Image (cartoon, rainbow, N blue to C red):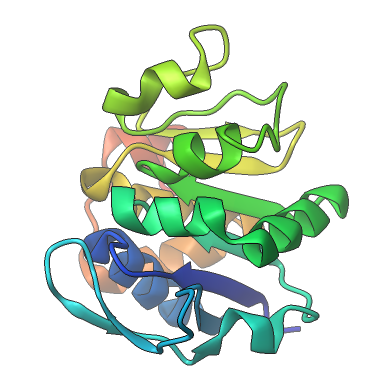
Length: 201
């Protein structure tokens, strides 16, 4: 069965993270729903660097749908919109209660997940400038961190977006499928992928 993935976007979302994730999920063969969390319900919006992102639908239109993964891009402005969206937080809580994958990158782990104390015991990373929001006992200085006990995947920023997306695919479909996505992109068999077991060292 095709995996279904929700990628919310908002004004101020970090475009490199959002576009990388959306593109990689499509390459993996998933059904990707890009939903606007904008309070005014606009589908087209300016991202953090001025690039225009366009959603498929409003968040409210898919609030009752089920997803195999919900992926939050960063960007301070976008993360603040996510943080203040009662609907999105409720969707995230339901995803968490069902044990399904939640993934967040850059400012989103700190400004959304930690702010609402959604995963009080989970290990996570985020952009290093937001480390204090996570707490020293839970923050990990890793480019990508997966807490298996909470099915929570977090990452640090635009420069880690490709690794972040690869980890999502590994989580949803396994290492072999992830490599079929990475190989045609001329993704190098780096030490990172060797450690994951996607390619042999």
